[in-house]
Amino acid sequence: MERLISVSVINKVSIWAITPGGLTIGQKLLKSLHDSVFFISANIADELLFSESSNIADDVCLDRIVIFEKLSEMFQEQFMRYDAHICIFSTGIAVRMAAPLISSKLTDPAIVVVDDRAFHAISLLSGHLGGANELTVEVAQITGASPVITTATDINRLPSIDMVAKRLNLLIENPEMIKKVNMAFLQGKRVMLIDPFNLLASYIPEQFRYKELSDAGDAVTVLCSDTDIDIERTKTLLLRPPSLVAGMGCNRGTARSELMEILISTFKEQNLSIKSLAAIATTSLKQDEAGLIELAHELGKPIRFYDKDELNSVETIENPSEMVEKHIGVKSVCEAAAILATQNGVLIVPKIKKGNATLAVARITVKNQV
Image 1 (cartoon, helix red, strand yellow):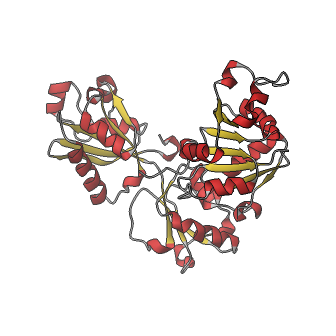
Image 2 (cartoon, one colour):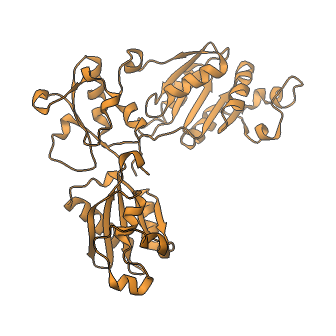
Image 3 (cartoon, helix red, strand yellow):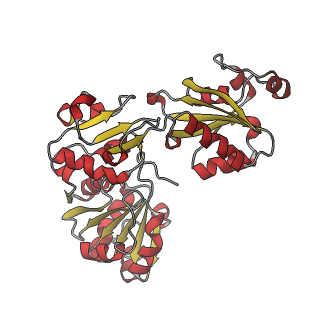
């Protein structure tokens, strides 16, 4: 399953301390970062839990404390369970522990290193997509440390295409192109934007983008679209907005594989990118439909369920069904559900019926993305 860059938000943070100085700093962070857990070496745990000077002994914070015996083993066990790790010890220790565990800038958690006097807070890993740069600034504000950020676009105050994608909740289809786009910005070169939703222009200054495709020549291209067009992918960064909703209906007991087939084949036939699928929508009568539930789980997408009155409130149905109305009391399931889930967006694929399933696709107004 591919990770959405956005919106990717830091929800769970671990804080690690192995020294008395780290213990003091970690207490400040624990109290300020509400979705955090404090991992403390057993060697210093008594100082926190039983010292008269400790100011953390309240039920809420104690529930968020974990005592460990061996740092490397506990860190390895917890590495992928958190969105970010704040390591209050040397950079060398953090590097040695994390090195065998990291795999991709799309999935690696953020790592911020703080020395145990809180002189510096260093963004060590996943600065952009993982949110380490932003977390470093927040940690510095809490502790009084000086933030250390080394990503080239940030220190040169240039746009960073991966941060733009994250901010706009865009899926990056080919992340290997990120460095080519950002390098163009660092070299003062322009890129060509193909941006039918006009999402990117306000984040990329005019001096870094061509206005006309005819002027771009061999420049790197950034495509932000939910459609698949014929373009040179080795020179193009593909960004996918979550702008499409698939309204679906099916006979009872329809298999996940059949539902997947109609979804994938229709998107391909209509030149739509499945990576821009934001949600599946259907009638509330299908809340226990195993095939639909399994389909949504496999795709990692939510299902929106609508009752009879909601479905019948839609006035822009193109293909009402007398049979559906006779059996469940609504004129439409797939078209109406898709339109509702896009907050009255545009129906771009009217109802298609294949086998035991029906499908319609609507496009979300970008500002109303679900």
